[in-house]
Amino acid sequence: MSFIKSIRFSNKYLFVFAILIVLAYLSPYYFLGENTHIRVHDNLDSNIVWYKILAESGQIFAAPHSQLPNIINGLPRSALPSALDGVLWLYVLFPPFLAYAISQTMMRIIAFIGMFLLLRTYIISGLQRGYDVIALGVSVCFAILPFWPSGVLSIAGLPLATYLFLTIRQQEFKTPKRYWVYLSLIPFFSNFILTFFFFLTLVGLLFLYDLWKKKQFNRAFFLSISLMISIYLIKNYMLIYSMFIDNGSVSHRKELDLGYNNFIQTIQLFKQNFVHSHTHALDIHATVILPVILVGFVMAIFHRMNVNLLVKLFLLNVLFSLVYSFWYWEGLRVLKDSFSIFNEFNFGRFHLLRPFLWYMMFAIALSIIWKKLKFGSIIVCLLLIAQIGQLFVLTEEIKYRQIGTPTYAEFYDEELFAEIETYIGEAQENYRIVNIALHPAIAQYNGFYTLDTYNNTIPLAYKLNFRKIIAPELEKNHTLENYFDTWGSRLYVFSDEIGKKYVFKKDSNIRINELDLNIEQLKKLEGKYIFSGVPIENHAELGLDFEKSFSTKDSYWEIYLYQVN
Image (cartoon, rainbow, N blue to C red):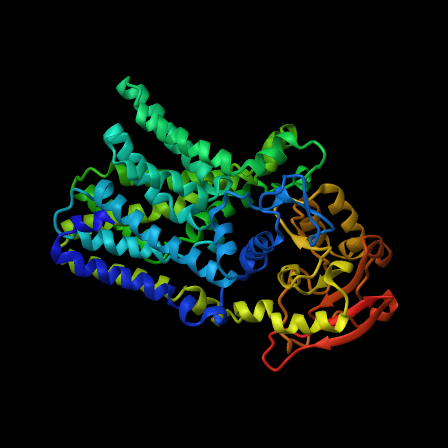
């Protein structure tokens, strides 16, 4: 890209070194391939399978109300990404794991470039020495954050989007045309509902501030905001249809019933989120970044420096954590119960912008240390090395190998499930299955038609029918009952004995002794087989015939096959 040419020659080697760190972080995907350990939660158990199923369904351009028969006897097409989702087309063009690896590479490289451009141009542009060291170091840190993998540019793309908006705001219609192209491409690889709705709200407030302060309508800035919003609305036509047009199907989200924390619990949630962040927006700031920022504040006060931007970003960070925590406060139930939009849409997600804020603050604080301490440059380099070091060991391969979760290949184990398919001996579309102690996504990935699933939106009528199957188990466990009834996006066959655990290695020695299901209701939904990750001791009492257990020397799983007699 052209911005590389602007780097002083003496620092091009530093730039190359920074890129090499990011590429090293990505290397397991390409060297290990499907033997890479990657995140299970909201990744292997869901998004990857959604993209694969849709890419292979022949229904990418189907109408929103059409159905995919291999999930819950007909999952509405509108429950999956639209045909304009850029990541979907990676899964159309490439095998699933390669598509995943490409999306991760895109996410990391764009995060690095975007943060570097933003820091170098607008955040620490006044720093003479150390300019590139801090900008490149912090950009590497941001690029190798443990982002939620399926978000792609939802958080990783925020610095680039900010740089583009600020440039258009400043240069107006003199802005290079390619910047408008970049701005137009971001929506296809990011999530409007997750982050960009909130990000564009802030950008819109900045536009209104300029309008009030300067008494001048910045047409280019307004057009850029309108352009991105319009592209998001067009891209999310499925969502718009299901929310505002389709009156024939009621989503289970109509019955969401979250947010009953008392005031003490709300404050505790604020502390947790502010210090340790959220699983979908991990920023790993507590050990190095937060102390550095506090030191930066003290030094700025001592040296009477103007750090208005640092203060504003810090206050925004606090505010976003407060908004998140109070969104689950019981005092807001009146609002949620009165207006369905507040019950179905999570307006507390401003906190997902916080990783972006932390790393801008980190850069500012490092610039203060560089300028004002005698050995500031050495200290800054050591701090960057420390932060990069603790982030690097959080690469998916290292983190999840240590945790002990299966690799991509082990998780979906195509060879094992092909053996099960062969044993059953029927066309997969001719029977339905459910899973116990196992994510339904595994069977779905391997072509089985499941009555259970994990999706963001599910027809409410089906959820209520499915609930009848597991009602006896829910009655035993209030936590599971509350989890299913107040949220319910995981339509799983729950067991009181194993709770919300869905990954059991073949040598786990876990067994379900007293499973209690409504088998007649399972039959009504055409359920014929049960795939279980652990043995069900009372299967005969339930009216289930044990067929066979399946495993291989290299399998992570042992699958117990039961037939409804």
